[in-house]
Length: 391
Ligand SMILES: NC(=O)c1ccc[n+]([C@@H]2O[C@H](COP(=O)([O-])OP(=O)(O)OC[C@H]3O[C@@H](n4cnc5c(N)ncnc54)[C@H](O)[C@@H]3O)[C@@H](O)[C@H]2O)c1
Image 1 (cartoon, helix red, strand yellow):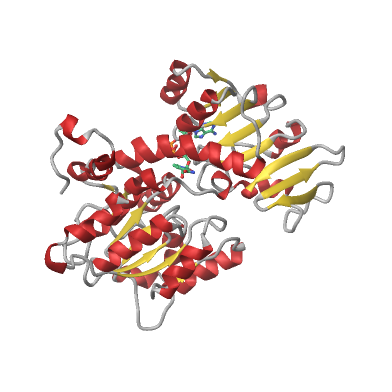
Image 2: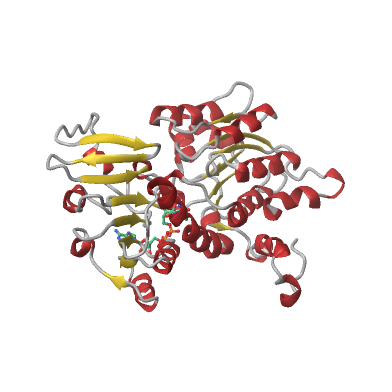
């Protein structure tokens, strides 16, 4: 991971630009990439405590290795909802230590601190947010006049938009579907909701021979989908015939109970988005508070559930419709957003005065190409483009 790893090597003479930073992270899942980011932050002088933003994607061996090397990490694969909040609380609520920086992915950590420990914001210098969902939530706080520290929107950094949201999703959607269902893609009818990071999903599925429909609410993104050769539809038009439904909108209740009722037997339902609220999974849950006794659930393998209707129809839910079937992203391109997230605390570190500007604070434009430039070491592009060395 040349991007996330790089700053360690660059810091001249063991310089510690993050000395004094106490970072609490709910950044991505606990994978090797996150481990490299944490090691880099620590090498630059920061203290870190970490939990995972997704209850399914933690690699237990990485979490164990981090814990063994002294990082306080609270995460394991297959946490319950209660475990998830317990882990966040253990990161934040510790005697004799208070965070002064938040690295968040989805906004749950920021909201937990606002709800439970608002006084901590007296010491917090800034929030770094990774995902579009978390950025939406920050805007809501900002509009309500409750955002009291600068926030950095890593989601809108050029490399996150151009690489993670397109190329990572292009690869990880196939990986997630293949690993969980072992399905063939050729000839399958797929509807992708949202043509943001959905663009990558659509491209991958089309290349594999699937027939891809797109739903959109934004006219520009809708037009882009058309220009790329996809059939723009309303979900209702195709819901009875599709083999796979994928949501990547960042929005709520895009797939309703009515849609789930109308899907055909064997339809696979998968969410690329950060939160499991894009699909109304609660309405088909067998447990309280919304018990649906007419439906039964059968766990067929890890992260794959069948929801069975009274007539025998089965819908295949991946990872209880949490992101990407709980599968990780290739380390190569995940290096870019990880690097942006790692750079952000440096610019908002306690040694730098807080920006008087509130929210949003974007990742600086001039640094944006640095992760890509570092990655280019392994592609024959750097000399051709005559690029300067990244700073
Ligand atoms: N799994 C991953 O690897 C990965 C990577 C990047 C982003 N994400 C997640 O994917 C989601 C989308 O992220 P993004 O960066 O593409 O956001 P985005 O805002 O760029 O794109 C979302 C698109 O969905 C459209 N949309 C919103 N509501 C809709 C609806 N009801 N029906 C149809 N379309 C609708 C929007 O118009 C927009 O074009 C977020 O939850 C984000 O966290 C996941």
